[in-house]
Length: 392
Image (cartoon, rainbow, N blue to C red; front, side):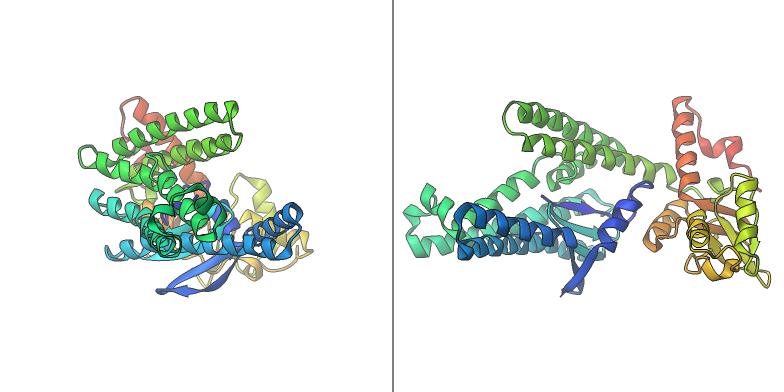
């Protein structure tokens, strides 16, 4: 019911992050961590109220259903805080927590590098739900007696009983040894104490995919909701393995190895019509913008098309270019550059050497570079020792 994300993410997942963040609004901060709600969460509350009202024809009971969802998601926030505060003890910050209809998303700046640290960060969330469940069981014991706590009427009809059952279900579901649940990360952390991180991840991912197939078969035979869970688990496992392979491939690689070396620049006073001509003349889609001999921004294909559609064909490039895209040095680590580009939501960056632009790096070109490295691995060759790594 929840996902834990690192800050880097996959090269092709930034649009999902944009969707989550751009359609969310802040409701406050807890322990210095911003807590957001996605607008679709409000739709969930409305759907619950209408469904309860239609089924029971009682506004008070319908309101209780909404309150139950709100309290449940309060438990989800506490779950995410368990991850965040444990990660903080290892010097890892959490950017924010966002509530979605499917649960919570905590965005950590990065995942712990040591297996034991990842183990404790992953297990901290479900541990919070265990504590909540124990507290609820204690309250029920005080109100109905210890012997009646786990009886069917109490667990299915009382507010606290239903909340107890859901928290237990969250623990069980999240501890399944499959990505993207916490159990998958716990399993990977345990494997990583004996194997390298990539091997541990791929093994855990294969287990997760196998479980997903089992869920899918069971879902077709019994409950269709299990099919949805199967897809969630399968693609979550696949994405986790892909991201770790990507990170391992980029480790220790300078950005110069993956940058575009043949490129054109624009001046900030060039018209967008001139930029459109450059776009049509070749296959370059992102243009560094120069002013007074220095790079002052970058004009992306989408910026250009949006401005032309708004009737700004004669406007200067400097009026619509991205100014928040920092330049990077050609010796900067490729992995950190990708992370910064994703965080800034600026997916093309000028590359400089001694103040002079020597290339452009964008996510599409990095994706092509990764594909080439994957193909080279199949031949037993290293991309870093190939002609691809020649200097400018």
